[in-house]
Length: 287
Image (cartoon, rainbow, N blue to C red):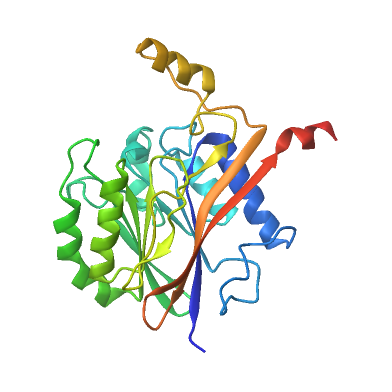
């Protein structure tokens, strides 16, 4: 039987509710209190934990950016690699630690002079996993071309790694889908969309073995607007006036992501499924 790597990718973590639900979920699957994924893949591993956990963390610190404290907190929670996006720069202390944060990846298509790195290599179960982060350009701030950049870098990345997982942080669904097919033709193992915080129902394995979903969703407050407070979101949309967004209350939370199983020998994904987990923490407070 071939060897497989079981990868859990968690959608954008939003503030303290997101950090809490991620820790709760990872603790519960580790302790066999809840089941991780389904049994639909015939070569599913016998244990209840993924081999490797990736999470998008650009909104993990009160909805904007990532502090070093929260970076270390999420490592302790069990996350192995961190992707990000355009909001990674919102906390200015990121410039003080990002160059030394080996697990943290900023979008690859920023200029080379920008601090941090656009991809990182990780070793797990004898396999080399490359995690890469790329920003889209439709309805986003101007950035270097993600298409030519990936095409140019792929020969180098394939020499270094057995598995390549790409977080495509973008707004437009059509751009994400197009990039998925583009990456599939280049031989990537998975393209996971992030940024819109709403989990899509279009997970699939493309013809060359690239797992794809337009958006993995988010981890955070379930009763809010993509993790943010309802009232401030409505006020901004109704009045068109600037309004400070705040993270929604913590009581009811949700976790969204995808599970991907990749064949180490081929670097191709053979299974993808959506992960959803809800918890009402207000019930805990009543006990």
